[in-house]
Length: 406
Ligand SMILES: Cc1cc2nc3c(=O)[nH]c(=O)nc-3n(C[C@H](O)[C@H](O)[C@H](O)COP(=O)(O)OP(=O)(O)OC[C@H]3O[C@@H](n4cnc5c(N)ncnc54)[C@H](O)[C@@H]3O)c2cc1C
Image 1: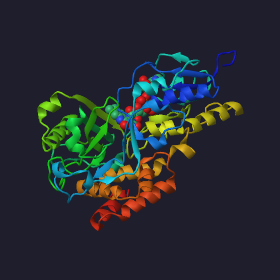
Image 2: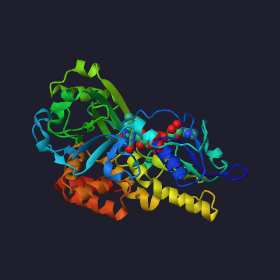
Image 3: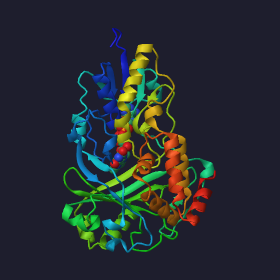
Image 4: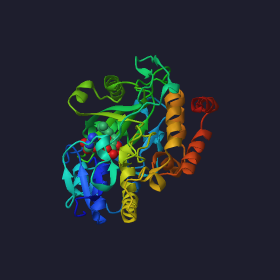
């Protein structure tokens, strides 16, 4: 810190991304101002991702549960959901991890930082006493705009698209003891996506498709979530809960078991609004956000040291908050191509969506990772999406081309 109180970097927002950035900046010898209305507030959401993305400096205890080769089930011609076992799914050849949020926070100490408990407006960002200001305030949602209007109600009453609606990922989840969840997992360590209809139908028809996500939790329970990958707004939490109940009933898990279990509600804005040019952005506020999956935390942890190096360089060069996104290259990933993929997903019909994920399940592991990893380069993502396209049946391939045209 300079004698007049100016820090090297101000990190605004102490979610997982901002806290990791503040911590690694301190470790690199930078002086840090860290600001959040509730700096010590625990993170309550379940945070999962691919462990290969995690940096070597993160202690192993930060990962509270792992599952190898989680499966994707999306074959519409497979047996009913209840009869379908792990053998009928496609394994994604990678290790999926769930963070222990308390251990993660403990692994990111901020001793030495100046911490202020307050909210910062866009105007105040430009006035903070720091050479570099980083906006890590999480995502601020935005719609895809007028040209993507598609309104109407689906068979299940869910609104499929609204004018300038914000694309959202929503999920309703329950937490079960492992023996209760065992029939659903049926030998798999985790189910990344089971796209087959919750009610045992072989097609979604006009209904918004949703999938079941099943992962182990750090407290040794299992999370089962009915998820709408992206909708504007798509099925709400009540509709998702209803679908989950129907799905689980097919495995012999009754409503009373769900009533007595812990719950989680997920809402993730899939597109973020552009931030003010006064600050660099990082995490869900920045290029680490993957608009195809809605996830950002593992990509933020993967990118953080590259970003700290750029901050240190900017401080050495005497720059003040250049107008660019931190970590966008090489660690941040390709927003344009992912944005186009998100738009196509929103326009694709329900059964073609299921076919798309069936094709995803049949991709080689490397290509699957390139779709899922926000740090993959544009050519990598393009090649992976093309490989997925080539695995589609002709009807769905034509539908995807139509959905991709602006
Ligand atoms: C139930 C649930 C499950 C999820 N599961 C996953 C998952 O498995 N994997 C994944 O990657 N993502 C998941 N997400 C999304 C996940 O929450 C975000 O990806 C993650 O929290 C982003 O981290 P972040 O630090 O960038 O932003 P945030 O966690 O949103 O943190 C932003 C911080 O900024 C602070 N802030 C806000 N406004 C201001 C202001 N004006 N001034 C100062 N500070 C401010 C907030 O207090 C907060 O601490 C999930 C979300 C939910 C709700």
